[in-house]
Each structure stands twice: as structure tokens, then as C-alpha cells.
Image (cartoon, rainbow, N blue to C red; front, top):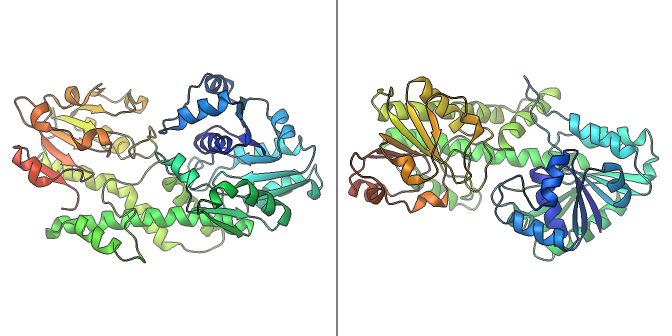
Length: 432
């Protein structure tokens, strides 16, 4: 099939590359010409394991092309995916749909035959209705169908999540579109993916409800970890004991920093905003957002306690600064709150992350990037394990550290307290 992906951000690029790998002809379109030129050279603007190799392979096979000519791409393709950003509005909580509606207007001017127009961007309930209204101003409704097909891609696991999804959600009442999309996704359905056909509004809400629930699980176990620290209980025992209940499941029950990234922070706020619009109180999700926003402050208090409130001139190392491993995404990472606050208190901070230097810390006093774990740790008073990269899981601190031994604060619980203590280091972790 001939597909057009509008937007080469995380969703559009990963989906476009993976659809082309299934044998479809895909045009990835972006108005950023510089970005398109880089993609044509095989330079991928986001860090996602395996994506670069897959993109280069399908580009060489001419199943995948990159363009800044939206009108031409729309006319050539049968299925149009809207994959542009829906960030939180400035000084607000609702999703900013400016890009989505601008794209809808551009699509409406380029329809030359029947098109399936799919919203893959995460959008609030009734957005599909609005897109349909925009396009129908210039086109007969028989010439197009607006469908909701939310994505469920995890950063760092996106290719696997696309190839082996738990479910494919298609929101439409149009039988013709449903049949075509079932055929499009048939290679994934044949591998066990559940194909769920719903109303368009239901599909839109499934995405938000899913992310809000996962955010709730993370926040829940973080709050339980706080209690575990006060009562001398290992939170990992709690996670295992809960997770063995099939009604609950073990995934997303790992205590650590606040949730962050491209989805959970904005989507929890957006579903609350939608509920407020319809005069419905989502009190549980509101509590989740509030608790998560306070999480970094709780971790900071723990740091101050570990250093006995003597932070000034202390040398603090952060191993990992992204919100999670296997991504270069800094959005809503706890490090964006913790590092500036420690800097204000007079700490001297070094950080290492496998994805390199971060511009977010450029203007913060006494913060520097180191190119290796060893250089980062040298001379430190406190080493904070912030992100659970595999690079850190087998670090032998005894071999790396000469002289003064730093305190280790493992915010991801990736080490054994017994082993680290046996090497002569003071060790602190989360909820144990």
C-alpha cells in the first residue's frame, strides 16, 4: 500500500520505517527541510535502537522516501497518517492541536481520490470529529474517511512494540476503511496482535486512559516505596508479591524517579483537561499528577539527608540523565529538577549519559559533561544512578575508584546492597 506519514518525529518516523519494512511504499513528510535532507543521508534525528539500520535498509530498497512536498505526497498515497506533535499548551493543561488542525487544512486541499486519513498523534476525544469538519468544508464526505489509530510505542522499545504489538486499535464506523486497515496490519495480526475495531472517540480515549493507568502504577509503587523506607521493608518484595497477581501484573511496578518522557506527563494532564471540559472529576489521575510532580523533591530531600545537609562544594555525579534508558529524551526527566536545585545549593555536578552532552544543562552553574563513567566518578562525594542504562549495571566501583570512596545513591535499584557494601562503599537505594 502507499502510505504518507506527516511528521517525522518519534511516532511518524518509527511507524513509517516499520511500515516500509512490512513491504509498503512509504513517504515520510516534514516541513523541516534540513531534517528531511539529513534523513535522506541516513542520519536519524532521534535515538532509538535499531531504527537507523532499518531506515537505511528500506531507503536503499526504495520502499521508504523522505519529502517536504506535502501536497504531492498526499496525492500519491492512499492512506495518510497524521503524526505531528500535540504538546501541552503553554500555561495550560490541555493538548495543543494547532499542528493537527493545520495539517487537516492542508490535506483538505490535496484530496484527488478516496483517502483514509488516520490520526496517529495522541489527541483528545472528539478531535477526529473536528478533523472531519475541516476536511468536509472542501470535500464530499464520500471522498475521505477519518480514522483514529493510536500508537503504543515505548521509547527504547519502539521497533519491537510496532512489530509485536499487544493490540491494534482502529476507531471508525466506516466498513470500507476498516477492511483496508485490517489488510494493512495483517502481517502483525498473523503474529498474534489483537485487532480491536471501535468507535473513533473510543479509540482516542483508549490511548489516554492507557497512559494514565500506567502512570498511576508508577506513581503508586513510588508512594509505597516511601512507606517501605520508613518501615524497613524492601519495595522489590512488594512489587513481586503484587505482580504475581495476574489481575495486577508486574510491569510498571518498579520504584524510582518520577515518570517523564513524551507521553505520560502531557497525556495525564490532557485527559484531566478533557474531563474538566465535560464536568467530570478524574480525582485519581489528578492525585497521580500531583504526586509525580512532587517525586523529584522527595528524592532531593533524600540526597540532602545522605549528605547530612552539607551540599555546598560537594562533588556529585549523575550516571544517566534521560528520563529512562535507551532513549535520548530529556522531557520531564527528574534530572531537570534535581541538577539545577543541587547547583543552587553550591554542589559541583558532573554527568555521563550514553547519548552524550545535554544542552539543557548548558547555562547551569558548575555542571559539566564527562565522556566516560570513570572520569565522571573520579573525585566524587556522591554518585547518583539516575537512569538504568545497561552501561551502569556491571560497573565495578572498586576498580574505577582510586582513593576517596563516594557514597552511592542508586535511584533505580540496579545493584545489590550487600555487594556494594562489601566493596567498602556506603549505599542507598529506593524503598529498601
